[in-house]
Length: 314
Image 1 (tube, helix red, strand yellow):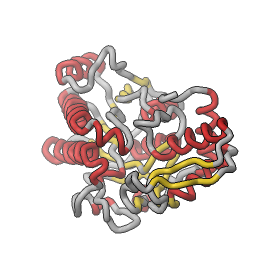
Image 2 (tube, rainbow, N blue to C red):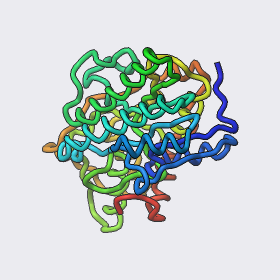
Image 3 (tube, rainbow, N blue to C red):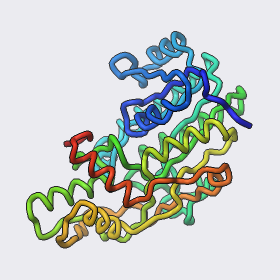
């Protein structure tokens, strides 16, 4: 089974976000017409605006990358926003795609959908087998609902709607705001500022022992294109690099790339989050896809973006 994007009208929902922008860059080589819907024109949390846009533009393929995202602090501060907005975005885009005859839709989720203590590496079947990590449960619940909604349209109406679950992403266009960023961009900013100040140390949250997997956003976009062409099943599918490392080792790698030679200290009053989160991406590997960008090279590229100011949260 192969779905061709050539000559198709392809809508990237969330094109200004990190993942959406990477999808737009990657789709440029697919000989397709790329459609976008700026927020000032279409509010994806409003059914009337989404429906009108789909009826006017009639996209044949949809990448649903739009979402309200943030780290632990943002999730704890704005639980309503994370749950409500992400539920509305998924509901309106998926329903409009069905009602206007979209040929194929890929819904992007997140690895935080899995239980806090899921067996490692986390297989797709682990979904809904245990309690979620409390620090991001609002976002996770909305993403789980999006997966199930895509499945429901597939089962009830025969829609070729699929869902993909990327691991922790970073790279071009990342958010470096100290209050809303994820761990890797937060570490890049901390290391850079410590170096600039000539500080003796930089502080990381928690114990540094939790293990995390990271994937460059350009690799994630490439995987999504691959899945759009080669995958059509009811079950969601993981997108990961297949390797993880402790946060402390990540901090040391970031410090090395940035050029900060001071101590790395811990703030035990801050939460660790999930102890480990490594995705089982064997299904994707069997479809012939592998990550290409190493973590060190990816961090170096991200730091160059940071220095050039092509980032959010500066």
